[in-house]
Amino acid sequence: MYVTYLTTILNTVYKVPGTIDPENSFMELGVDSLSLAELGAHLEDELGVTVDEEDLSAVTTVSGLAVLLESRGAVIPA
Amino acid sequence: MKSRGLRRPEVVITGLGMVTPAGVGTGQAWKTVCAGLPTAAADPRLEGMAVDFSCAVREFDADGLLGAEARRMDPFTQYATAAAREAVFDAAPAAGDWDPARVGVLMGTALGGHATWQEQGARLRDRGPRAVNPLTVPKAIGNIAAANVAMELGLHGPALSLSTACASGTTALGFALDLLRAGRCDVVLAGGTEAGVSPLMSTGFDRLKALSRRRDEPAVASRPFDRQRDGFVLGEGAAVLVLERAVDVRARGRHAYARLLGYGESSDAHHLTAPHPDGLGAQLALRQALEDAEIGPSDIAFINAHATSTPQGDAIEARLVEQVFGNATPVTSVKGVTGHMLGAAGAVEAAFTALSVEQGIIPPTANFGERDPGTPEIDIVHGAPRHTPVGAAVSNSFGFGGHNAVVVLGTV
Image (cartoon, rainbow over all chains, first blue to last red; front, side, top):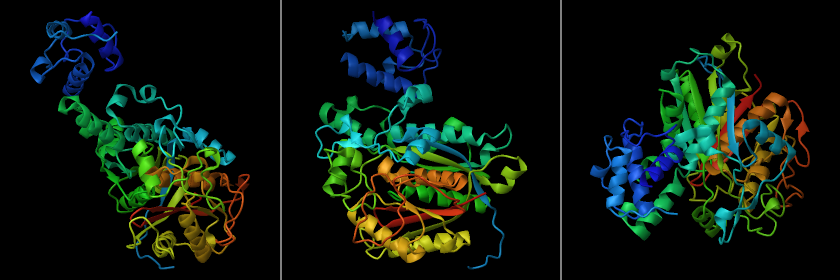
């Protein structure tokens, strides 16, 4: 659920093309540091959790971030 | 005319790009302006405001035109970038024609990314620091439209914003002319951009009593020079003009719309918002521009007026026109169609003037019906476009703070 949520916003908002492998890091997906800062703010805004700078770096993978969101009790909007 | 010792390079306009309430793209905008079709209408963004209508840019597909980068741009940058792309496409340089290090970008804007500042300021106040978008500053700073144009197009010459309020677009053209004449650039993308339709701007201008309050009939609210004008209508958008040295353009056998013959700029040094009652600063800029162009008032076949539809400003400009040109030279204000695009207005109007010069068509002043008995009987083109050769034309722009900027364009 969290992975699908993340891959959807990466495709639509951040325009990462094609099918996203959740084991890819943000660097591998071509998401730069400015976009990561935006993504962190975006997730806090939408999911009501805290996502710190150290939670979200170039080497973070999509599935790693999904696990973190789940552990923090993020509620994905319907 | 003062003779000049040095032969200055001739500068021509080779590309036009526009995002305007009259249309996205130069072709559509020019068609709407020539048809004299007003664009003012109720604007959902202004719901609940005392003035709840505007001349809005419609059918602008930022994502489609600009892709992923659109998200990182305030609308004032989106408009500028889309207009710049169109202008360069129109100028159609062949590979190798332009040395990127020698191409500059000068973008006029009065407000910069004011919508972003407002939106993020509200988030900070209502929800605290963590709600503020990390891109707030690079989206909103005043230089960023020019910087984005340089980034998008890979241009390495000087890129900067100029701000002379509602004269900004014209000021940008003037300084671009200087850069080309001084040999600092081979090509300059010059223009103006503004995304000024917001609740705060509508209210701010209304509190100054600058806006029309014709809520019941917005389509006839922007009526430059008309007896029943009662203020301007907020517009938005951008225009970019590609300026190059004529010698380069001729050598490559490429098309140019018009020559940019001269430029004048002055300050009233008089009042925060009101123009000098005798139009002294405006007259100075106009006379400087004609002198710079090395032509006289009788050579001017068309005046693209600043006239925003305010009672005071239009009257002063009408008197200025009569003083400098007499009352036989045709005058138009396109703001009857586009509303007042603030820092973009001068660039949009210069672009339309370039088309008037190229095609011999003077668009009508939309909504002009009856002359104001308090102003001179100048020749205000209205009702239908006028087909007449336009050998040379001026485009006037005036801004809060007493800035006056005038450009002179002529046939190639």
